[in-house]
Amino acid sequence: MFLEISDPMAYHVAKYIRLSKEDESEGPSQSVTNQNSLLDEFVKQHRLSVYDTYIDDGYSGTTFDRPAFQRMIADIEAKKVNMVITKDLSRLGRDYIMTGHYMERYFPEKRVRYISLLDGIDTGVESTANDITPFRAIMNDMYAKDISKKIKSVKRDKQRKGQFIGGKPMYGYKMHPTEKNKIVIDEEVAPIVRRIFAMALDGLSCRKIAATLNEEGVPTPATYCGWNMGRRGPYAGLWSSERISEMLQNETYIGNMVQGRMVKISYKSKKCLKQPRENWVVVEGTHEPLVDAETFRKVRLLVESRKNTRSRTYDFLLKGLIFCHECGYPLATLNRKNAAGEERLFFVCRTYQRFTKAGVCTCHSIKEQTVTAAVLSKVREVCQAYLSVDELMPMAEKAVEAARAADSTEAEIQALQGKIESMTANLARMYMDKLSGILNEDDFQRIYLKVKSDRAKLEDQLRELEKKKETPAKAEDEAKALVQRFLDSAWASRELLVSLIERIELSEDKELTIKFRFKQLNSAQFEAIS
Image (cartoon, rainbow, N blue to C red; front, side):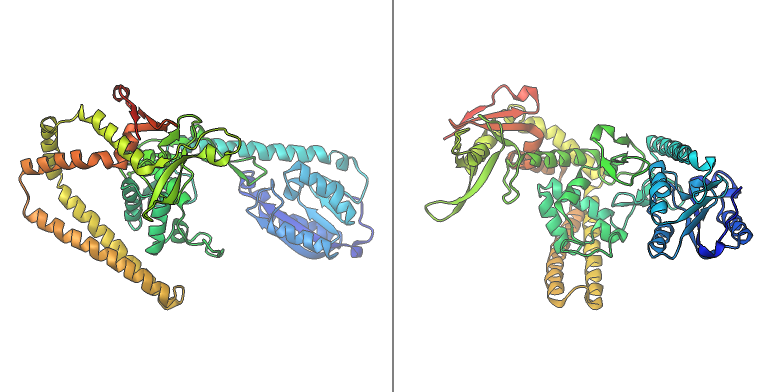
């Protein structure tokens, strides 16, 4: 097969062996033991001196970033190795570009002789087997590409069936203990996820929610899963507004399996690209939801409404809803002191701010309170045509009866108990962090007092609910109170405004244009303000 190696003592041999999962399908002949036995036989036959054996078990041939291969390259650079032997060319690699690089350029430049036993390749001699080596490399590459397509097809089929094929489930879930490719609720952190949605529904921004969780010392999803524990930085182990926003818009929490958000560039690269939402694989009803669909819908509206605003410093009722009528861009907010020294928010045109000298737009300066009051007045006027106490009473009574039937007070009690237990567990973890030196005394005292105070407030609410459960009020009285509370406070609810209003425009003449999400409410949408 090969010419006689005339000077075997001049060579220091590297036996290279590689086996990946796709190679195992070709049979036991590709095993590490079989490859090593074949290489040993050749070495003994030609009385060669082996410097070392390099084994990459479980590594694909489409990449050359393999530990044993890189160790062999380092030994070649150190001139410890000048002959490389493999069973066949595919053991060296299946990427024809990189395989050609090592065979045609790297090995000759480093004066390394390469031998592939079964292919009859020997770069130390002239032979026809060497001439067809590029074609062999292309065939090996095509095999790797074909295997990649098959694996991708199987994974895509599992995704369409709603089977989970990722590494770690979304925070709040864990792998099913017995069933493969299925996820179940992780009761240890599920209360935290529900609380995040509850805070978002109350109107808190993603940044505020993240800050609250950080103050209470709640472990982040990465910390909880044990990811990136070796990499430390100023923001390591902290919740971020981006993480909260991603969670609040993830349909996994309403029982839908969401996969395919990232796709690898090719079988030769580990780099992944984000996919547009329309290319995601979403299968409904694959697992138990953590939040109800209506809550998720409202929270998504609240989050999306903030995408139209740049300011994250000030929170106001119309945030993300109000735009300039002339240029169409969102209005910015400025904090200014009045004559009495009191701080007040003002709306100004962002285009005017950026391009004042160009005269692209005008200032539109007006108090935020004035605009908010005018919008609330118009919303109240429009909606009251559809609402009256007499009409709402039957619905309210049914709601009270249904709530009693579902024992809503008991559900609230359980929710509060869950929050209290979560805070107690956090306090215990913080104490252990203090003992282990992770948390210093000052930080421990500050966080400990804050969490303890919040827990005390929740315990007071729990006692009130337990008293209420013992002495329930009449259904009619509860219904009246419910209706009146709705009529008095609904207009100032950000949740209601986002659900009703799609866009508010303010003109330079201080005229408001309110675009409602429902066509029947758009009959009267102009309001002049001073």
